[in-house]
Structures are given as C-alpha cells and as structure tokens.
Image 1 (tube, helix red, strand yellow):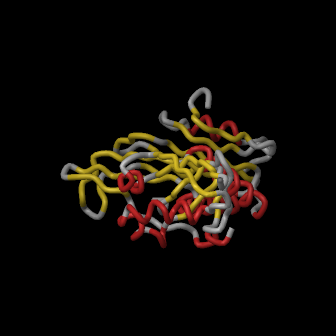
Image 2 (cartoon, helix red, strand yellow; image 1 turned 135 degrees about the vertical axis):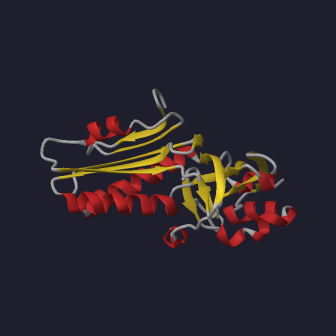
Image 3 (cartoon, helix red, strand yellow; image 1 turned 45 degrees about the vertical axis):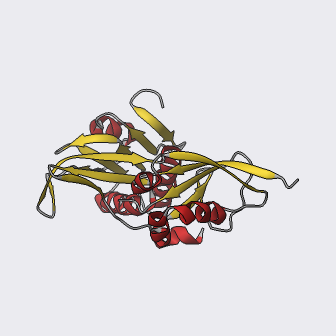
Length: 242
C-alpha cells in the first residue's frame, strides 16, 4: 500500500469565510506538494479557485512554491493578500542587535518601545503609528478586527527589520502590530526607528510600514453600521519567487 502523509491546513482572512473554518486536516499521497493541497480544496470551493492568483502558500511558517514537497505532520497555510508570549505580547523576537518585533492583543505602549530601543548615541527617534480612522472612502467605520498567522508574521517582521537596519545608518528598529478588535483612534501598528541622524530614522520608519503592509501575513476586517468586509490588498511580488 502506498505511503500517505497527513498535514494540517490553515485558512486566514477572507479564506476562513470561504472554507467555513480556520483549519482542517487532509491526507495525501507521499510526495504531495503545496500545490496539490491547494488544488484539492479549490476543486470543491469555487470561491477559493477564483482567488488562486492572489493567494500565497506557506509550509511550516515559510513561504513556499506550488512544487514545495510536503512531509507527514507539516503545517500548510493559505494566505490571502495582506491588508499583517508572555506579558503583553503573544509573539515576540528580541534581536541580539537590540531590534524588537512583536504582536499584541493589548493597546500598544509606544513610549515603552521607544525607550527600549533608544541609545545614548541616538540623535533621532522616529515613531510611526497607524491608527484606526472613522471611515473608508466615506463609509463610516465602527471598528476593525485584525488577525494573522502569528508565528510566521513575527518572523517576517524580524526579517524586514533586519534588512532595513543592514541597509540604512540606523541604530535600532522596532515593529509591533496589534491584533483583535480596535476602536476608532486606537493604534493598530507602531514602527520605531532610532539613529544618530534623523534622515535615516525617517527613511527606516517609512520603509518599515510600507514593507510590512505587503509582506507580513496580517489581515484586516472593517465593520460598518451596515455590514463588514475584509480589506483587499496585495502581496509584494518578490515573495512569489522565494
């Protein structure tokens, strides 16, 4: 009898609504690939098939291609376009160089993050806060809900932050994203960059939020008085070639 492998499959954002749940398990023939898993679900979920071109696949918290092989016990994730522990953080990475990346379900303490990153030689601390606004294209927003693939999201945040730090004359960088329900005026994401001089700090903060919004698996659902909708975005194209 041919060997079989069993994998866990996770759905996020709008794909969770399409699948009717956030997760499933499936048994496949030995040698099956990420693409084979997607094909199996797409065959019985037409709405998923229609999203094929915009969905990225991941295996064990790493982006993968359709031909990526699977082993028994692997965790597979279907990721729609992004709209992205102990104490206050559900996941965190404190980098040896002093950078900090985390997810939280509590209000973000921006002052504490900046204080954690700032050094005596820094002449600039630039803070970007993304806050919940009260409307989208004139449609009144009541509140937002954010969800993400947490272990993978914090790893991607750290990868982005380290790349920015390696390419710019900054001291440290921090990224913290909040999950769950957020009211109008609350901060959903904070980017902090410290540097000896302001130009590099501003550039790092801007690049940080721009890349986070297209590369980190975090999804946003907007709730209105007359309905709700997942916010559609797009992936950074470089992720498809990993």
